[in-house]
Image (tube, rainbow, N blue to C red):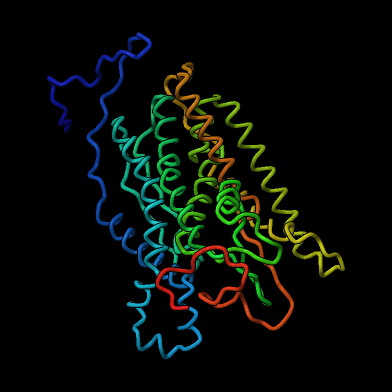
Length: 368
């Protein structure tokens, strides 16, 4: 039996911003927003990022050299004590990013879920970021733009001061013999390191403070989200600014480039087996093939809007240009570089025992 109120019209009369009249069906009542699952995932991600941050803290080395001291101190106590700086910084960046999307969606009355954080203890970051699910199609081009750009801007505003602070706390040290895993430089990261520490000599690097690494992760997340492909944040921006055809062409070409770069990296990784030693940066590009495959599975199409004919106003276009500049500043061509220095296997100098090349304060709370 139909429960429709006979006095309530099934269709309602609406006016578009352009003055056009029409009829649309009323939206059904929204389902209740899930709260328990997002909270549980948020708490779990705090735990996994603390676990990752414990390994990033230089004070962890003394416990690795003496495992009995870790048992005496208590694992979970140490995880909180050593891991909270990284966890707090990276969670603040991710939370700001997702809240930018969520609050803007709520402002326009677009149904959106609470952020779903993705805990993952088996990677160096402790998380795969967070997502927000839109429960309905966004109907206006301006709304697509505003919701898409709000997250990266909110995250960027938070990560920049954290990156400056973290790099300031990161001493420059000579890399000792052994294998070193170095985060790649974006333009923003390189610029901040140069302004704070000057030109870093060959064979040296900053000993990345957990807060600096959290900001670097935030920059990487911002760049990946601002890729102008599909329904990523950058895809929303390019779709709104340039229309569906240009959005589709840009996304298609970018995935092609990522595929080619990733394949070159894979070939370079196996080249030494055939007697050819490729440049080191080439062997570290293979990871882009993973992103190309993921983007292909995620899809490169964008849902249509009702006002496809409309143009963004000049202010939004300027904000969009700033968003694309933000992508350029945070993009990391080679996210991870593996450097092996011959000699006795002994990684970087112990934290708090820097060489004469140090030009920044040691980690707070570390006894040198």
